[in-house]
Image (cartoon, rainbow, N blue to C red):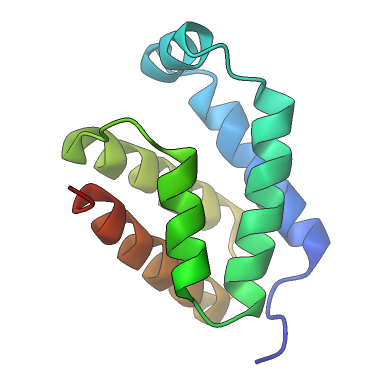
Amino acid sequence: MSQIMNQEKVNELVDRFYDRLMKDDYYITMFKARNVDIELLKNRQRIFINRLVSEETSNEHENQVKDRHPFQIAPDRAEMWFNNLKETMDEMELNSAVKGRLIEKIELLLIRLLNKN
């Protein structure tokens, strides 16, 4: 399948999303406690989201998510993260097909991540 979201839009989504997260005390504290380099994280997200919207979801994507998240993810926190991402997409007024595809793929990955035990 051809790419359905250009890199410029992916970059905008990631930047807006992390701007949103960095206003939330939970994420500010979590990123600081884990000594997260936000710019590195944003770059990884850009690559990851670009792959999600331009390729079929594969076990490689799932393994990548699991490798990057060796810690236990609480379902309520995953839902909070996902809701922030969806709200960011809503603000950008993305094409509904693009938004739907991305939401579907990320939701599937989150379900698998939460059930990784």
